[in-house]
Image 1: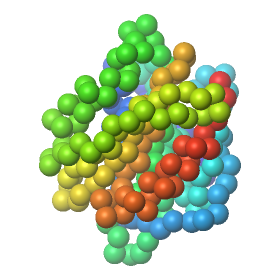
Image 2: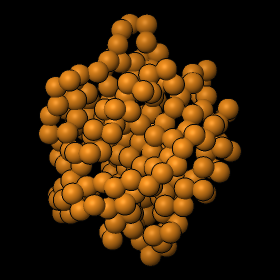
Image 3: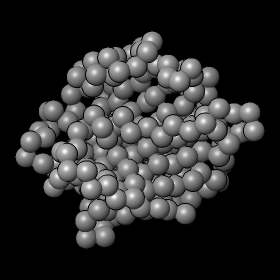
Image 4: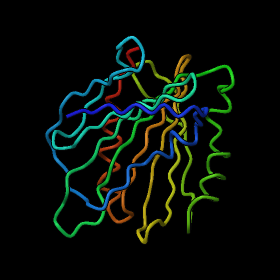
Length: 199
């Protein structure tokens, strides 16, 4: 089931807010080998932003945040619980916002600035990797970073991919417990390989 939440906060959205929108939960989860097609719903004109494939057992939530003259669409793919004693559900978050005149192509993908802000925000932050990857059938280049940190007594590891197109900024994020990261990054990479931009 997909739910849409509107936020009328009048402050200008920040790119940092979008990619730091990582879904924390007190439960956690398992994987599924069955995959289904997913098509996002855009904030404007009811057009799709992208399509991809996701594990069939994962939950989907769409959050639409309207701030000032900007709309940010967040899509959360939440993995199922592994058992009653799990403390965290791994998740994949896609954040999509329209580019505006005050967000340049360079600013939106400055991973050095992003890493500095993450280091200031999280305990025991450790930057592990930065690379460029090619996504989508249009062969668009995107920037990828991997880092780990501690929060609420748990150790996390994250992979984030930043893609800027002519009209939009896409931020794709995997958040997993460190000891589960290798299991989930393969799912995340498959979701990314199946992304097709449609607007």
